[in-house]
Figure 1 (spheres, rainbow, N blue to C red):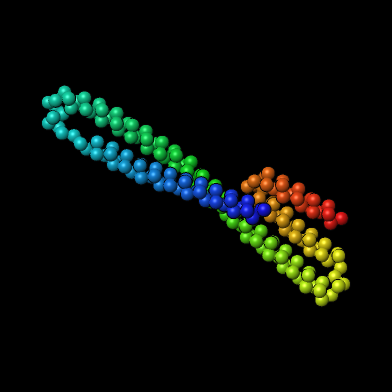
Figure 2 (cartoon, helix red, strand yellow; figure 1 turned 120 degrees about the vertical axis):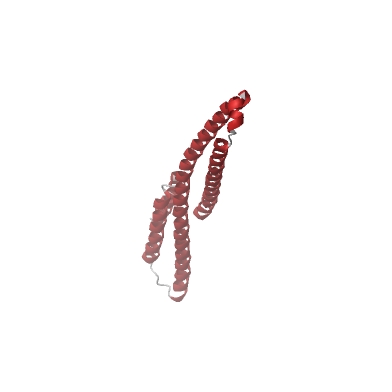
Length: 175
């Protein structure tokens, strides 16, 4: 159950990370294009027609307005990219935590199945395996699951609460 949740969450975070990276790259390209357009507008003057034509003076007003619009778009892109960088870093940190939790969970699951296999093997060889030994192994498994929950607290508190409730029920059955 935890593993399914972690894998779904991992998929969601990867999708978000991809979205933020694509938006960041798009904004970078748009900023370069806007800067090039500004340079083009600033350099597109015909001095002779500017002096003798009223129409050219009117175009200058439009050019300066377009340059201001482009500059304001660039500042918007810069602001968005600052936010995108923060979100990318956040997603990468969360993804790292999720991947660590998945590997820990897989290790715990593997150890639990190994313990169960070992216990059945030991039981078949020697029927004198004490109940205390199996309880200790179960307690070790529960402690490992609690450590996993501790790592999940920052990602999803509700999920951790559910897991802790399940662990409490298991502990009650041990007594």
